[in-house]
Structures are given as structure tokens and as C-alpha cells.
Image (cartoon, rainbow, N blue to C red; front, side, top):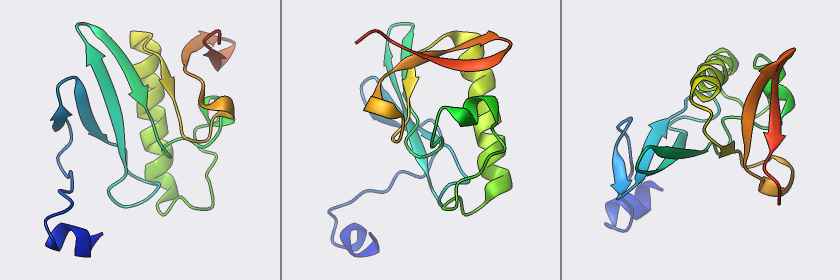
Length: 121
């Protein structure tokens, strides 16, 4: 990636909340890999989150401390997931993650713990 940046073909995003384009904002979600980002898509007051590898499976919604072997900083990854769940639970915004079954969007619901409910598709 450094070679691409040096050649002017890549402009790395390093600032949390940096707009990439109209309605698309980068969000730092550290812990999985250095510089890991998620994206927030916005239209008016509507939001949708693309969490990338910040979360690897829906089980981590109930168990944010479950780590993936590729999390370079497991404690930071778990803290990032916990913060995401607090934010998503409060806003009711749809989200998906790179390794969720079928890459379906869904919402975080609270009942007896948290759970992911996939949008009809």
C-alpha cells in the first residue's frame, strides 16, 4: 500500500469522521488490523453502517469479547465492538459486516441480550 500511496494512486484515510464523498464517512474501528475503518453511509437523518472486519460473526453481538485469531489487538477489538453495539442499539440503524451470512443488512435488537435481525431479502 505504501508503494501505491507513494505513486499518488492511493490516498490513505487516517482521520476518524473524514468524509470520503457526499454521504460516505470513514470511521476508525481499531483492533482488528492497524488503521481498520468502517464506513457510515448517510442520507438525511438515515444511516447505514458497513463494519468490515470489526465484527466477524453475529455471535460477537452477544459476546463482543470473543476474538478472532486475526485481531491484532484483541482487547481493543472487543472495546471497539462494544462501542459499536452501544451506538447501533441506540440509533436503530442498519448494519452489516464483511463476514456476516449473505452480507445481509440488519438491525441490533435488545431483548434477552442483543441480537442481529436480518432485513427481509
